[in-house]
Image (tube, rainbow, N blue to C red; front, side, top):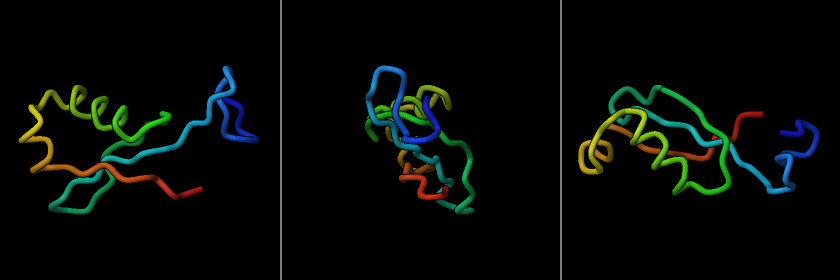
Length: 66
């Protein structure tokens, strides 16, 4: 990824998303991808949780930190 303009090597824009524990509000992980749906799927698979349990425990947000 080109750090100067936020584009991947193929010219597609990427965003950062964060996985947040709903109970503690702690940021658990971050990932860079084009769509939030991709980030949600990535985190759900990584945590090895079904959709219901994942949504009960975590939320995925845009990571607006620079």
